[in-house]
Length: 236
Image (cartoon, rainbow, N blue to C red):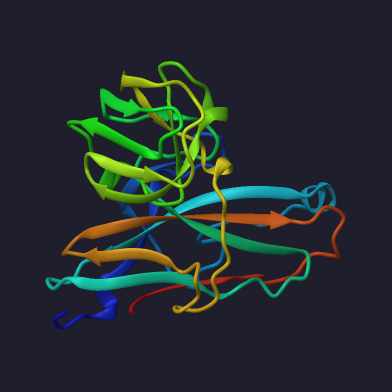
């Protein structure tokens, strides 16, 4: 790793930022997130939402704008919310996923095999469109209910699932990524935590997405002024 300026390590919104099922997508480099600014990720929780409970999602993007590579990068929750009735969780994100709507991948041909953890593709973009922790499925024959979590992505044309695929075998299927609400989110609190997100190596203008899930407990205590959380990304 060369000389890295923290001023050139930046956070951005995703392409569809409005809250809802379609929130997510790729990075929006015209919409920087200002660290420490009020409501820079989530809006205020209304009193009605506090009483009823709330689960919502935001996909944020971390980008290295240094000329040198930022290597062996990991991400974690440095400080969770001080409020007693809510908390945040995180998981890695690719460029296609949305909050709760399955999205067709660019890959026109993906091979899913029942009882196998291997998924391959032709002319695919696994490394950018998907991320470890997201879920994929054979959208030609199956529904989102068949989606399985990605354990590793070996290349743009090969990935490994965390469990055997229970859906339909199809060597020429259309692949889909499930909504973020299907993911298993984690709360790593240190760079050496077993669940710390592995962002890998980021070349100049390379970026990685992170889904953040906020859960507000139903009927919790009165609202908390200036509630906050801190995500930290650092080379390991």
